[in-house]
Length: 121
Length: 249
Ligand code: FES
Image 1: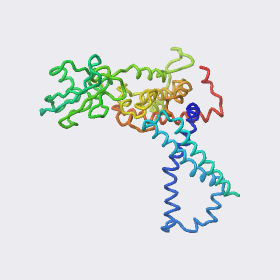
Image 2: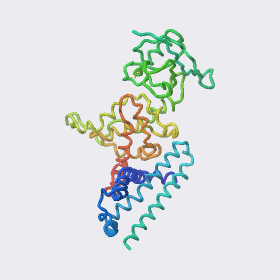
Image 3: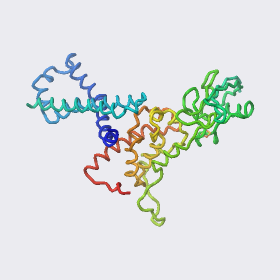
Image 4: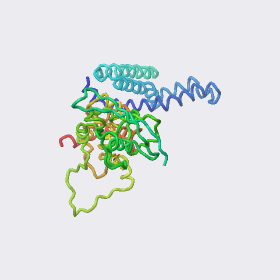
């Protein structure tokens, strides 16, 4: 497990840094615009109508962004938790904890892919 | 010059006599412009010649005077006594075996340095007749800061990963390896990246950033390591597109 994780480390770190980017920068802006902007009238309610959002979400680029917004932060969180565990002195059980963290992120990502696919259905 | 007294609580350890380190207090007069190292030298010269500590240049260049001052890794020849209250604790750097009193063992540290091949690696040595190698100011700027390290090891004392993972190559050595990877004259990146990706390499770093906080030369090892991670990700991605020649070296 440990060697596999070592081998995959560049991908995992890539997903992690992507997740930190999305979770730290894009999502707050997204929440601000969609969640608060609409409610406070700063963004035209029409612009956030069901049909438009549906069209946005089923556009290939929109779908990809949606998938990134859901899946990447999971990897960010998983990687963070694993390293927190190591920093707290859990190096011995790193294999197990790492597999658990990334496993959850993987399952979550698959669910996200499924969800995005169903939008197109 | 103003004069006052301060108490220095110094960690003492004699491997022949002591099982565990103990502390000893010295109350001494200090001058206003003294550094912590001046106080230690005063203690050794005037009060207790048995005290052992390492130093040489006294101008933040040689990197030998690193110690924990009030629990924080400091270059003692640069750290003003006036920054501290009446009592100052001086201990050896954390995360290193102690040889005696404030002197730590450097052996393992040196091995880690060698592991990253901190020299210019080229497939074929350049002949003198070929003239100088040109490098633009921008290319130099890509690694200059990372080459300012004086090997004082404060970053190893500060790093939480070093304390947890004895095999972690560590901030200074990884930053130095990255420095050579960034150098346009160097061709050793494929070899170094394999070491970087291996156990104890760049991906063991959890970016606590403590190394960059304590670095007296503003080398920013944490920044270097994150850059190295990114380079490894791109390298890994590129390896699907082009087969690399670095493997069989
Ligand atoms: S004595 Fe040389 S760096 Fe402090």
